[in-house]
Image (spheres, rainbow, N blue to C red):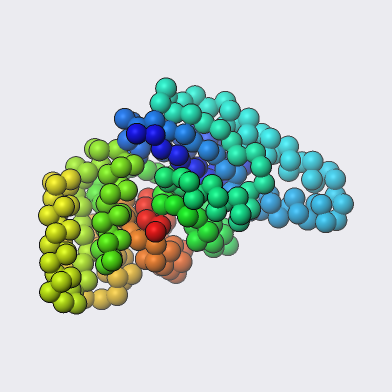
Length: 263
């Protein structure tokens, strides 16, 4: 299977290390076309200011940094099933929407967003993307999976995308699924079908009903033990997790890979 993957990184990102982290999650049987995007908002702002104020030296310096980023991408040593390129045009809302609209996944190096103001830029970036997103921290070792069930078939799409994109070994990890109380018999039946589908792919499943708001139940489950989790969510809860003050202040949440299905 051929897949188009966008990889967002900063100018100062260690792209070799990032590539290894990305490879640890993706299915090695697929053929990949990676496009690296320089998502440093700070550099973009500096470029705009340099142009506005006629500061040619600052303008030249930041263009040089962008060229260095592109050269690092071109110098990557990759597997035979991987093709890489750097996006060399201007990255704006329009080009991002177009690129992500045809991509299977957008992987974002969260280590490029270290402080609170940076994290808000990350949230804004995720909101603009039109494909599934994987927020990838510096440490990518995971021991379990957490999924918050969402109605209207979103959870089914989350699982199907996960099985299509990610390394099959990850399905062997314990999976915790958080469910809302069913609203009616129809939803109860659909959730039974969904659980039966999950059991086909995930041999180790634990399920629990949520009695509190999903965001609170999620944090309770995330902090229930010390094993690092890969988190699977839909768009609304995924963006809520990123924007939650608990996430901004909590190293456990920030250091957990987060897969967000985008409809």
